[in-house]
Amino acid sequence: MATNLSVNLNKIALLRNQRDLPYPSVTGMARICIDAGAHGITIHPRPDERHITRLDVDDLAAFLPEFPEIEFNIEGYPSEDFLELVERIRPHQVTLVPDAPDQRTSDHGWDIPDHRAFLSDVIGRLQTHGSRVSLFIDADPAMASEAASVGTDRVELYTGPYHFAFMKGEDILPDYRAAALAAHAAGIGVNAGHDLNLDNLARFLAAVPHVQEVSIGHAITADALVMGMSNAVGAYLTLLRA
Image (cartoon, rainbow, N blue to C red):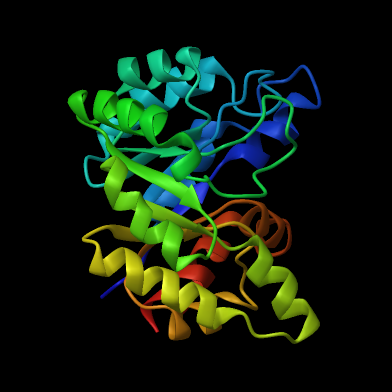
């Protein structure tokens, strides 16, 4: 099974927001990623708009229909404001994360049993509007199995701990493999994301089955500073195709 690449553009917006200037352009960078072969575009608008803004969401929603084969994925905590936004935009996929409003970046997955009723209601609401829903979870096979009980279409395995273990020479990939197998057995699709990069991605995909999509932002933006975004996207696609 081929694994798709969705490029997260948050860091492009963060760079732009450091100055009162219109560049780098989020939609312009999306076009470069698409032209280079990316399969999707991901954004994570936060309440303080420190990177992706509501205007960016609208601009991408107007731009991406030029490329009907490209998936639009919007991540966020399911506050009422966020839900109203994605219900209006109707992206292909909504990835729900358990982030606090002021959290710097996602750093843990959902405790599904503790939020079962809430997640079931939110997921059903979003699916009614035509979006596929993915739940951000830790590499825990029990949690992957629990995801079926709230009706989610996919889970996204939080790969931050894998990155740090990889840097230390530790192997925690059996946990990710077990979680992916549990999700697949429950009839749920598998995504993965957070701190995947050109060094650790191939090993992850070789060990973890059924991964349909990886979402990569920070690393691919850093690589783009060295090789350009088009070449960076190409480098990740080479790993995925292998």
